[in-house]
Length: 298
Image (cartoon, rainbow, N blue to C red; front, side, top):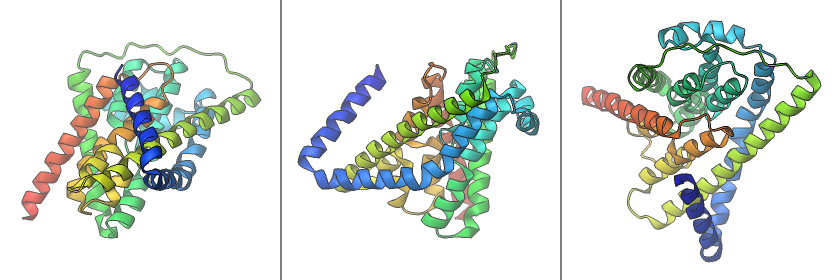
């Protein structure tokens, strides 16, 4: 219901802009397309193809063993380790895409998937180091504090989600073997699935980039706050460039990040309320930690 209303509002805004402010719409669309083409496709498209192939060929065992300490602590099925790995290293919406594929393969339960997605579906280390530290902050010395704060808050969030929100969940799920398709058909299917998902992500990035440009054009006071709530990448470019003030927004991920995540779920696997709650918990924890650091610095 909410998603349909939001889609209708977005369509109305885009149509209104195309008639009244075509220059803003064109600039927003070009910036969104540039972000999709230069950042998202190189980072995510090859991973999506490879991830689909790895999952369908049941080749995730090495990654699962590597992530076993974390899945053990969180009392998750060890096969959920691949979803956590995807979220920690590849960014939005790799964790969601991997976990949804694992559920469709009957490898993990929906509960396992939702715990992983709500906890670890975040921006990638490449985004934090390359875009946040080097382009926005222009300071390589920020790597360590940014990474420590962000990933420690991610870990705290995962414990809250697992042991408070999902406190009654017990891992009693048994994996079911699914017949493996022919390798040629599997690769074709993986490529088509990746193309479909990357196309959806591009559409959302362009739409929310247009909205961000509208905010910057029409809202005179502190548009960066609303921009970061809508689309984090565009919002960071107009932020105050102090990582302790914008890291909570990165943890939240923005409305665009949420819609990107939901777009890869075609089987209603993701519990949207749990996911949104998880992102807000992460943002609040990050805000608290950043506030403590600011107090110590002053």
